[in-house]
Length: 218
Image (cartoon, rainbow, N blue to C red; front, top):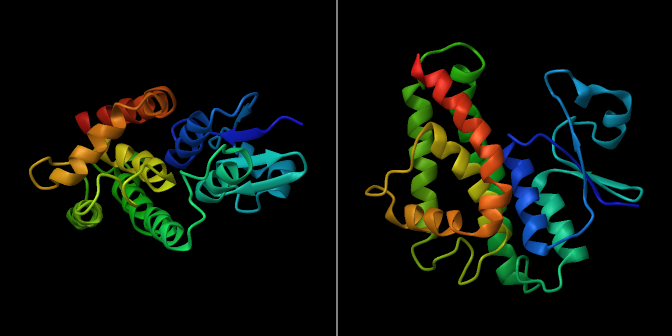
């Protein structure tokens, strides 16, 4: 059977999976759009695959898994020609895992907390406390990059791919200040030059950009 990804292009976790697939050059992937507004993620079939009814979901033959980090790690393990994106060395993998948990535990919650009042509840400006939380998250990433060009060492890994999907989305709402976070800014610019970023992150990000500009212009 064909590897299938259930997705919504605007979603940062979905775009992290897109970029992982692109880097690994996995052929013949089937993509299925899931319209959350139409509650397509709440159908009986979807809930059988993913009781949490989130995107993305990956189905590989009769195996289904959700959470972008779990999907990305699975894809590298099964389809990667090398393990460079997710090394088997326990220390290197531990650092990558920490950054992935940071993405799910700090970066993504900061994004959700920042944009939900404006994007979904009609507020006209970001709440100061939420902005401070984003600044704190940016500061942590800048610190992670104090000894290397990539988030988990000298080479690009899943940590960079997954975190840049979230940070690029945060940047649309609250741009990264180059002077305040020079290492983060340099890392972000480096990733924006990658073909996998341009091809698989930028299209969905453009949708977020249009929404952000509309919501914040008023």
